[in-house]
Image 1: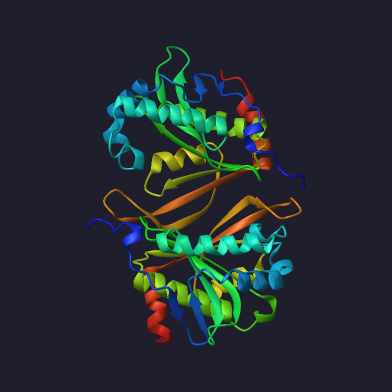
Image 2: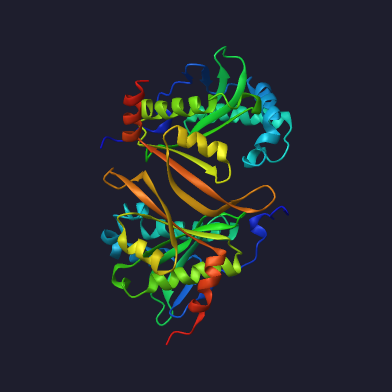
Length: 200
Length: 204
């Protein structure tokens, strides 16, 4: 095996184009638009995303968005904001959480409720998985979600991921009730086979 | 739900015993003992333990032991060493890792010195640490992860009553760079409560 690259030396494109979307790494200046999108989605995200459970001031979101730009530069985390094809309308956020040594990447995502039901999330997940396998030497891509988040689980299934594990009582909902978490995985060979099939 | 306190405010003992073992947090002075134990078993541990690839010096192990003691105090990671009560000999290592105090849930890890294997020490330690997690730390879930090829390790989990919940495929690489799979075993509080009476019966 050749010596692995130090993550910060990896060349990673800061944007990905899909049929209807433009995924782009956060930049300084994006904070207010991210805050507006989170506020539009917050009540919808509260049950599922620990970071969305409590209200946060705009300054905190702006700082977090800048930190995401920094972590993208260091390759610690690859956040991609989701824009419509105009490149200006911010509808949500997604990203890859890398384990560079293993070649394993966890995909996360959310969109504003008004943009749900149009396949934007599946389009994002397919694009990020393809990006990880094609450009980042991924061996595996995974999605974790809470067991009763049926929307999120449906996205994973629709994108060809396999349910690998149900971790019982692994987290709590905002009311403190214990819940199960699901782990979905997609391997390089599986992705290649699907990719050939769809001819995408 | 009440906001959980900063974990550093949690009070719990840093040592406890099982029938044959003293299980305790690392302390200053443990470095040379750890070094000797790992050195002796390095070839045995190397296929499974990323930390056994390169052997730290006794001084480096002393740093590792003191950092482990500090992380225990901070309640970030509860590394535990296993000693035979009868003669004080180190048997291996274990601990509660990947802690989420909000649940609370923990992952148990373990290794045994090669000459000490096959004597049930690790199963005894895992039962003791599992009960420590549920009874003392109010765990709701305890997890064991292992390489799917590490049969002795998977057998410990099964023998201790853990349920195989799933297999993560190609989620890690072995020392030769080959992709490998990981078993996830879990135990919930109701399951532990069922097992507890059996575990607490005095050994004949």
